[in-house]
Length: 158
Image 1 (cartoon, rainbow, N blue to C red):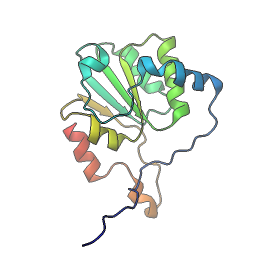
Image 2 (image 1 turned 90 degrees about the vertical axis):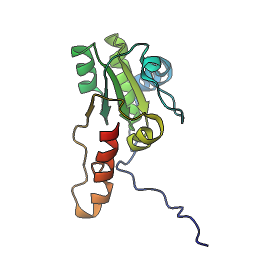
Image 3 (image 1 turned 120 degrees about the horizontal axis):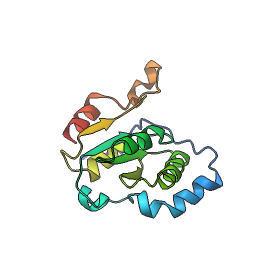
Image 4 (image 1 turned 180 degrees about the vertical axis):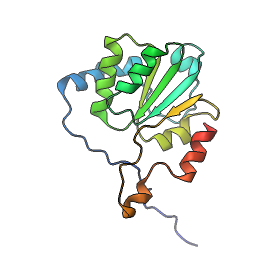
């Protein structure tokens, strides 16, 4: 009987917790309950999460959230979910959401693939935004590329 493979799966990102400002730290602490979706394993129900039924759009890897906040401002009729691994960027977006009083955005902190597999029901989104997805130009890094056939199939299902 062979032992199960205990190696960590290859990630498409490297978490670099560069400097996080006091304002970003405060935003993560104070604004997360309003905009953040906590970790878990239960399937997400969008009308419950957003408090309304509307088309849902996902943005993966939103960085500091400029494009996500702009889209949410331009299209208040939509709900937006942003997934990001970089805590300082999440803190920046949370501050922007509060400043602009945007109510149609929710944020998740973590690996998009895991979140999509574990928490997001199929046929949830009307669109998925993924800007500048693969900062892995070397051939030896291709295994880290997010956009691969399995990931594309997962996104299509969602």
